[in-house]
Amino acid sequence: MSAGPPQRRLVAVHFDERSIGRGTPDQEHERGVAVYDLLEENEFCPEGYDGGPYALSLSLQEGRLVFDIRTEAGESVVVHILSLTPFRRVVRDYFMICESYYAAIRNASPSQIETIDMARRGLHNDGSDLLRERLAGKIALDFPTARRLFTLISVLHWKG
Image (cartoon, rainbow, N blue to C red; front, side, top):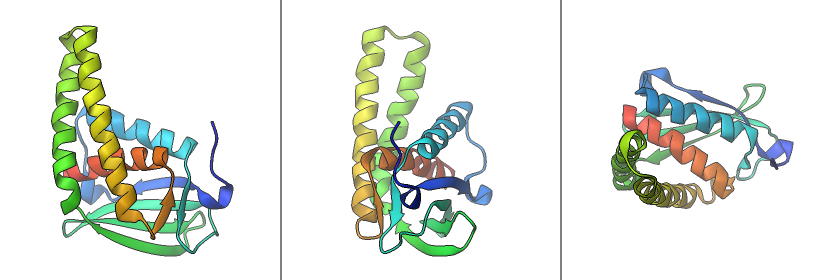
């Protein structure tokens, strides 16, 4: 696995438990895998800063997504607040296809599972692209990092 330079990566991700609570076992599993994968391999750097590595706290406040970025030592770097409105359609569609996917895993044919999984990955890519667009000029991140962050944002959106 390749990782970004130490000053351009995340080493911790935290969640505001009041915003997200607990999800279904499938949701919690997906969140755990995304956090693990994200911390193993990522490229993440607030624009104009090169003093990482960074810790990220994600929360929902008044219907907005809050990225609270700090140094590994806990010093505040920057807070970015994004409207969730642009994400609503893709997140809703992503949840619907995920539910179909989890149901299919239990009793569908391999070809049916593959078809649903292709649609799920396509929506995940759409959400990741949207996230990169919304963070352009604020946070530099590569596509795999955007995919993992989109998964986490989806979990937050579930709870919102």
